[in-house]
Each structure stands twice: as C-alpha cells, then as structure tokens.
Amino acid sequence: MRRVRSMLAVVGLFAAGIAPLASGGTPLVARAAPSAQHLAINCEYSRICPDVANSADVFGTEKYVGHDEPSNLFYSSLPGSGNRLSYDVTLPTDPSATNPGAPGKSFQFQLNGALWFGMALCDTQSYPEQVSTCPADSDSNIANNPDRNAPDFIGHHSGTAFVELQFYPPGWVPWPTWAVAVGASACDATKWCAAMNIFNLLEDPINGTTQNATCASRIGLETVNFAFVTRNGRTQAPPNPVDSTLATFTPDPQRDLFMNSGDHLNVSLRDTASGLRAVVNDLSTGQSGSMTASASNGFAQIQYDPTGTSCNAIPFNFHPMYSTSSEETRVIWAAHTYNVAFSDEIGHFETCTGVKSIPATPFGVDAAGNPIGCPKGNKEEFGAEPTDGDDNFCFPASEALRIHINGCTDTNTGFDGLDYTPVWPDGNTSLHPAPFLFSSPLTGQDFNVNYQRVAFEADLPRIEFNTCNRSTGVGCTLIPTTDDGVPASFYPFFSAVSAGGACRWNLGTEMPNTTNDFGKNQGWGTLLSSTYLAFGGGGSTVQRINNFRNVMSSNPCPA
Image 1 (spheres, rainbow, N blue to C red):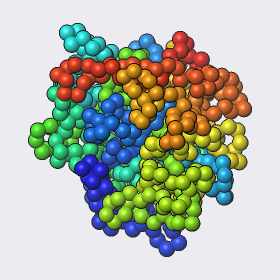
Image 2 (cartoon, rainbow, N blue to C red):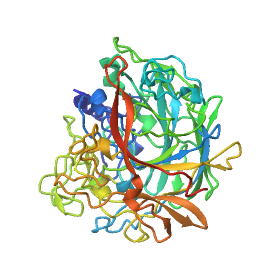
Image 3 (cartoon, rainbow, N blue to C red):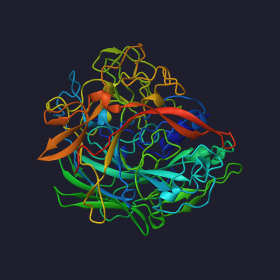
Image 4 (cartoon, rainbow, N blue to C red):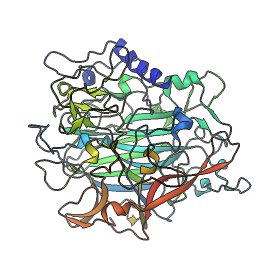
C-alpha cells in the first residue's frame, strides 16, 4: 500500500496540469507557475532522506530503501561544538557537456544526489515519543544506555530530528521533477543551489505504533521540512510537509541563492533564539543566502497521533539538541551514529543506453502511477550490462537542462550503478568532475577552534540486506556485493588533499594532491554494533550492526 500511495501522490501532480515538455524537449516543470496543490517528499523512495535504523519497522519490509551515505563525523568536547560551526567549501566543476555518454565520463549529478552538512535537532513529536521536553543545546539529552533502570536509558531519549543543509549539482533534470519519487536534482543548467532539510520519524518503538494511516498517506512516516536557502532568509512557500506545495520545491532564481561551479563558500550552522540558522556566503561572488528553521518561516513539528486521523502541523523553532559532538550524541532512529557530520547521498543514478527510448513524463511514472523503467534491451553503465529490476524512475535526456543523458534514479540494490565504478574525481577533469572540497568545521564563538577528533562511517551493513547479517556481521563487506555475487568495482573513500596550502577533505578516489588516503577503503574501519529500541518491545533493546566506523584519536586535517 505504501508504494501505491507514493505513486498516487505523483499522479496528483499530473492532475494539477503541469506540462511535461514543450516542443523541442524544453523542460517546463521547473518553470511552471507554482501550484497550491499539496506536495510532500516520500522518504520511502527519496534519495535525500537519512537512512532509518530498521526499515521494516517504518516501511514494512527490511530492504535497502535508498541511502548509501558515506560520512565524515567530527567530535569535540568544547561546549557549543554541537550547535555552532562553519566550513570552507569549494564547489566542483563538471566536464564539458559535449558527448556526455562517452565511456568513463561522469558528472556530479550522477555521483551525488545531494551533498550535505548535518546536525541533530530537538523535536518532541519525533521518535521515540516518550518525553515531552528537549532542552536545546544540552548534553543532558544524551541517552544511549540499554538498561531501562538507568537514568540515561535509551528509551528516555528526547525526540530527535536531523537537519541536512543539502547542496544540489546543476545540469540534469530539474527540481521539482522527481521530488516525490526519488529526491532532488538541478535548480539550474549551470548553477548550484542549497536547501535546509529537517527530517523526523513518526514512530513510537516502545509501544510499537506509528503515525495514523490518514496522515502517513499524506506526508509519510519519515517526514521532511524543506526550504531552499534564499537571499533574504525567508521561505518562498510553506516548508512543513502538511502545508508544503509545488512552490516549496520549485527553485526561484529571483529569490534563491544560486552558486557557480568552482565558487568558494563559507557555510555556517548556528543556533539562534528563533531556531537553527544556516548561512552560505559565496566568497567568489559576494552574494549570500540563509535559512532559519523557525515557526515564523513556516517550519513545524507533526503532531504524533497514532490512533486518530489528524495530520496537524505545530509551528516550531527547531534548535540543536546537543552542546557537544561525540560518539554519544546520535540520532537514535537513524542508521548512522552522527551528529555533526558531512555526507554524500550516493547509490542511485544509473545510465540507460540503447535504441529504445524512455517516455517523457515529468515524474518518472506512467499515467497509472507506475515507475518508468529502463526499457528491456537497453544497457546500463556505458552499455556494460543489461538493465535490471532497480532501473526505475527513469528520465530521457530530453528533460535535462544541459547535460543530456538518459538516467534512472531508483535505489541501486545491485551496487552496480555509476557510483560503484571508478569514475569519481581523480584530477582528470576532461572525463570526471572536480571534487567537492570542504574543510574540517571550526567551532567556538569566533569560529576559530578545530574539532578534536574525526571519524569515518559507512552504513554499508545496513543496506547490504541480501548478504549481511546485522546481528553477527557475517557477510557484511567493506566493498558491497553486486547482484552477480562479486564485489563492486569501486567504493568511494575519504582522503585529505592539499588545496592552496590548506588541508581539505575529498570523498571519492585519490587525487594528485592527496596527502593522506587513510588506507583507502580500509579507512572505513571495523563493524560497529549499536543499541536500538526494539519495535513494540516495551522498552527492550537490540544490538544492530549498521555501520563500519573508524574513530581517529585526533583531527588529521585541521582547518
């Protein structure tokens, strides 16, 4: 039923009269007059959402629902490090759009659904639904103890949300074309954009309940407050999922901050009286944008009502949950153990080449709401292998803004998509994009204090559902296994590079200016078992292996 509801939501946008394409293949979706019809992102399919710890509890089946999130975590015991920080960022450039389907050629949008900087937030209407308070910016919210008699019992954890300040690459199919089905893409043919995404989970694991079906059919169970970063800091449409509309997800070049490939940015997240504020200063152009997660901007909690039929948005200022950032400051419903973190949403894009065309539809679905697949007889990934069952939500090259290539954007369960081939930034900018380079964050009142420690974390065990036993670790591998039963040809890793005399982080493969590759894939560390609440267990807990993690004793790449 959940898949049917998701597809009907997409079809509802068709009914709103949004034209797929004009003659000549010019995409109209991102330029259509904003509609007042309700639209919300469904995280069961969207590639922009955090992976949940146990998808069977939320989505009804234990499957890889779509979030390979290799992450870089930052730890500091300094008060304020959990709620005040800044990064230096250099946006990548892409190869020429000429001959985009050349063997071995890649673009940012193919590798990265979204790149983001994150932080844990308070949300008393979110998982685990047991306490009505959450003191902001406080380590008193730490509760990871499996002992239900302990004061820091995990079941006493305050309700938690997670913010991701996401950056979207340019050039391919535009927002909001695939907002519902699988997430984000381009705001513009050549320019980047960014958005604040706040995720919560409408689930009570202790009593084994979830949000009522009426509300879940409208907004899902893992829900999203979404707002583009704007030049005046005001939302362009309601960001909360109850009130959000097509206009919420339609980029507005007159209001939103657009950035050039190659621009140098300063990106900050800090708490204010009105809620968490994100600021992006484009040091290359002198422009800036911001977004504050405030009630006055339309941000809201979703009232938890498991037995009724309500779907109420409660105006809310979202504040950071913790004072510091450590292994203990986690979002207890997420697969990852992160608080202050950088991550990259990978594992979705697959090419679709061949003589058979993909129908031009604005949301990657047919008139009945079924996802459009890559036609049988075509090939995926440079024509190397036949299409398979996960080549869905496909779009023809004619719908792209600039880089005209066919693509499918469903979850890549076979680990054989473009992300799992060696086409990541490597210095060869005629074939591959430049890297997304970012500094370690700085904290402190003047943003001048480095974080003390760093960790790498990959949620591969969580998504290797065909091979990995998450109780024992048997079959959980650092390089995921393809449908053919062999290791994928590539998995990205973090490295430190020298950029203009400064140390910067890179995710992908080794660059010519690499100073430390941390053992490449061995840098992901060893299997990590974490404590979670058992769904419907009355407060019992389970241990689950959802990640590989490597915690370093220092920060090897200080800002």
